[in-house]
Amino acid sequence: MINWSHCRIKRFLAKKQKQNRPIPQWIRMKTGNKIRYNSKRRHWRRTKLGL
Image 1 (tube, rainbow, N blue to C red):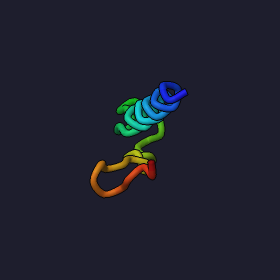
Image 2: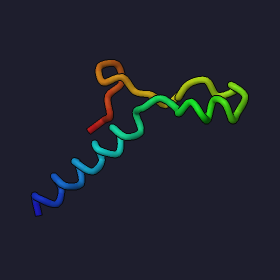
Image 3: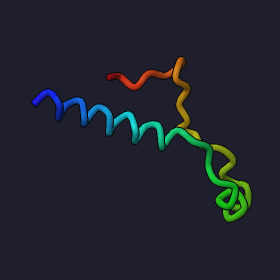
Image 4: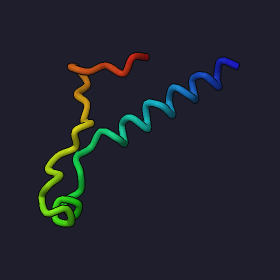
C-alpha cells in the first residue's frame, strides 16, 4: 500500500507544477488584456502546499 500513497503524492506535485505557470499570450490578446497575469501562481519559498 505504501507505493500507492507515493504515487498519489507524486501525481499531486505534478499537477501543482503544471498549474504554476504564466497565462498564455493568446489569452491576453483574446480578453483584451483584462487578464494580465495568473493570480494563482505559487512561489516555492513563500507559499507552501500543505503536504
